[in-house]
Amino acid sequence: MSRVRITGGEWRSRLVKVIDAPGLRPTPDRVRETLFNWLGQDLTGWCCLDLFAGSGILGFEAASRGAEKVVFVERDQRSVQVLRQNAATLVPETAAGGRLEVHPGDGVKFAASVAAAGPAFDLVFLDPPYRLGLLERTWPHLAALCRPGARLYVEAGQAVEPPVPWRVVRAGVAGQVHFHLLEST
Image (cartoon, rainbow, N blue to C red; front, side, top):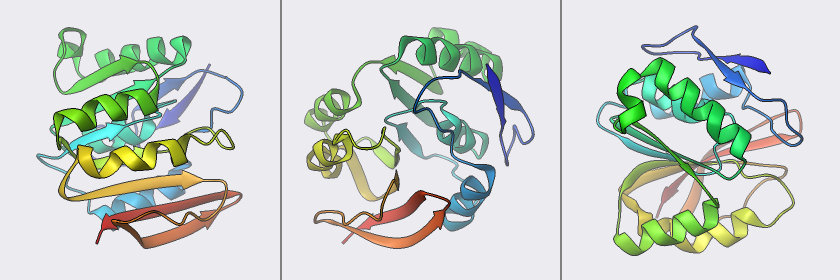
């Protein structure tokens, strides 16, 4: 078990636990700082979805900066347990639901089910395991689950070319990780 530091907001410098698992790669501090400089540091009132949560660090960063609600979706049961522990430590009422919600399960299926219910999110974090085609299977559901003006943050092993209605407005590379901020056209 290792720990990752929250870089800004209410919980700045707090550490969250992260399991050691193959393919789990928490977004580095420098990349998270860049992302939240792009977004602005105040996410008050935003509803965020960390769709392939892993460590959940992106969602915890958003909540630390005032997001009203963050929904974490993760299929690995050990990661789900650690996400719940971290959420309960940061926001004690999380155990009964509320500001931080942790959902075990498949991210693509979750996106499809939420999309059917209509727009719900202002920001979606997409950092799925690489080379499994998860991002490509998720694209069709994103426009329906996002509110007008929503943004997507995407990490991938290569530069992404998103489908309509999304366009890349900011991008960077850190090591072998390509990161992107997308808006709808």
